[in-house]
Length: 244
Image 1 (cartoon, rainbow, N blue to C red):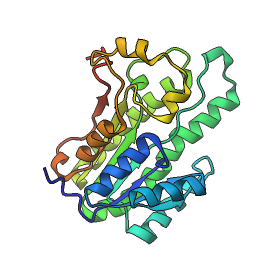
Image 2: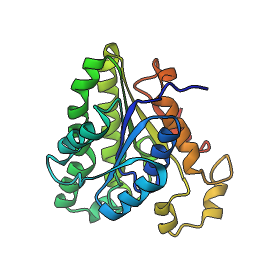
Image 3: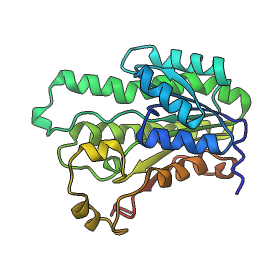
Image 4: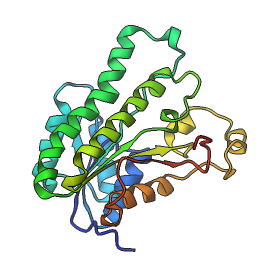
């Protein structure tokens, strides 16, 4: 299937490893011009060499950094037609162990950075009459997970933003969707020290997902074929979600 992504300009955040890297690699394979970013210059440069993308360095925790990132990406690949907003999850802790300062920091890092990115990419997408905005969130946005108070709350708010944007921008040829990864074999999952055999037993597919499976979903939603799909929260979780 031709996804129609040849020569499209794509910006993928948090792409030095894990799901962001897998999505960027898939978009490169589909013929897109891809810029990737993370805050570590050496890591993002190495990933870019390995997958054939353009590296950019950006710390989204810094106010104004997201706007500058879009400017930097535009200078090297052109105005982004596709943006994949992939930010790291906030620290895990129960509500009574989270300080007000941590709430504010997580809000700025997870929510406001996404708002700033969207604010920067919408004008050229509107002018072109075409755009794809994908947010990598989590199944926690639909079914809260114990000790994930920050992520449960803020990612649900991101879904509200996605739904609102999708209604406002659909007539401009811009789709806005969320991708919800379940348990997927990434460095972060490995670092969590979970008993993956036991976790697999809780998943209907009876296994942990692969990053390339998630990336395939992202590439489809970024494609010309997915032009009538917007405002959706699509899980790639092996059937782990129970909600309708």
